[in-house]
Image 1 (cartoon, one colour):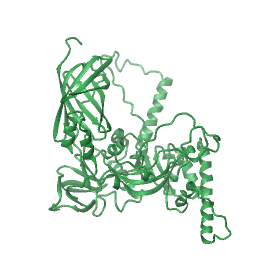
Image 2 (cartoon, rainbow, N blue to C red):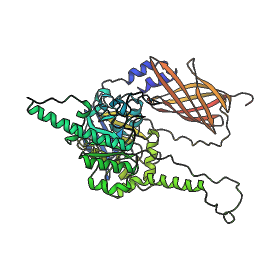
Image 3 (spheres, helix red, strand yellow):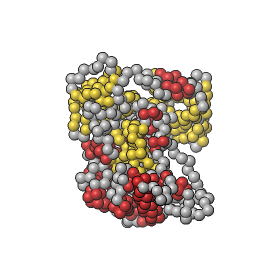
Image 4 (cartoon, rainbow, N blue to C red):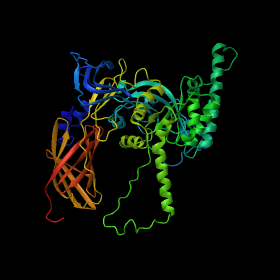
Length: 562
């Protein structure tokens, strides 16, 4: 596979169909794998030094010391590597194609009584029918160590029913593990039609739930004694509530703030349905109620953007002894409130753990690129590494009813594992393998990228020879950057094929640009993120959903004047 990728990158994607075919479902050479001499973290607090894991037919066949490799097993050398149970996402849209964003108010005759689809009331829809295992969001989450996710459709008040999916392994046909696993709801109003407000959503919820109970009761009576009784008209919206009414399907409410938490708790108590709170970012005032009601909880992995502290500039006048304390202004007070709010979000997970409430994590509104950093911020704010690991493994497995098959590294469970070269939460740790349903995917250890300097004075103009480090091979291309610092453009050439660059930007010493490719009926974006240091550069290139690869280069020529 990596050789195909290397050949494909070399002529800049002229052979995209070959790679696409390589990404399709193919039977593995073996269904048995052996990880040996690894540090196996079976569950938070339980670590097996110099341990081994035998995987066969998608299951963990054995875990322990002094295991021997089966004759038919492919050996994955685990020396100095760490093995964890694959992470579980408690609520997400991963693998669900995002619908086109519509603007403007929908045209309906009666905005107070719009069709259900326009009102965002579609509980009959199923995420299981929408999952696209090839969606780039799947690979992005997989690369972080997530192997399973509870996914739900996009939408408003009632987007549809959730499903438990596997993020890889046996491809599209094996992606859905458990369909119709939840009934998803959120306090998200529709544009310009009823229900548009939070209060309207709650009123509509009560109305639909009570109507569904009446419809269900009437259908039951009709089934036992139909003669002389008018039958109930089929209503897919109301019938979607039946499993909720029977207690067979929990309602997952996405809650953006503590007011939403209390609203969802109150609605569940009033109507009598099983509730799970998901993608929550502020729950501390409601912890007593959550704990008393034993409501499953999934905290958001989305955090406010971290504002870096400004460093003192060199050569600034005045000493500490002579500098006066500035008088508080509206701006400084606002900054203090912003900083306090940021701390509250970062400390939320630690506060929940301290209260003795079990919780998992949700990536519903989080960006994949921020997840590991956000976990680090939570740990820095008081969450222990074992607590963070539990929230990624054992806790979501228990809360989603998956403990028998996922969440720990134990014999008989699905072989969903993540393997790293350092403890997962350690700085500089790299994911080396992610194993889903017994099928491993290897990742190259990323080189530590040099930090960019926004104040650096460099020039990117000139001709560069760059190499892309694809696993097992390197490819060489020629990069040509022209123009001025404020108006750069360029091309990239390999094996005689030249392509234009888009969005060429130099900020300090950070050079970024993209290049678009179309081949074999497929479109792909190469996103370069480089750092210029004199006549050398290094960084990485994101190749669509196929991964990120290291880039190095040197300037071979530059204009006489710059």
